[in-house]
Length: 206
Image (cartoon, rainbow, N blue to C red; front, side, top):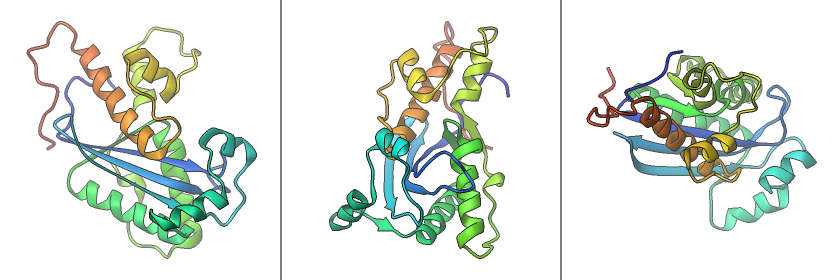
């Protein structure tokens, strides 16, 4: 991966909140998507999932979600079962991929998309779409490139990147973290282009 100086036309932030940290044993309980075109926010979408496994205490302390609060959201928000949630996430990602989007997140391929792949393997028939096909940008990986040769042992997270770049943190909310990831990426590219402000940030995806 090299430092990005031009952004694709269509960026989609993607994030999940989960029952725990094992991508093979845990489940996503919230999916968040945000769409940016030419670096401008277009829309956001979030929905919730009642899991078929316990929510760990550590995860609950981070995102504040438990089965009772998820069930209560049925009154006003989309709350699905595990299979429905995974199916909808895959369909959304497939539609964005076909539209030429780049999917943006933090620990994206190693966590959020990896868990989605394993969940789909567990609960869905093969629908012909593999999330490995997606064009992805991980802002934490990008930061390692941007800030080289800073020590790579320095702890980096979406929250720490938000602090570095003056972005409002997502607060461990899937929709908020998806938005924060895209805003961090845009800020990284602004920093990459320092002194070249006349150059546009966004380019049409090819």
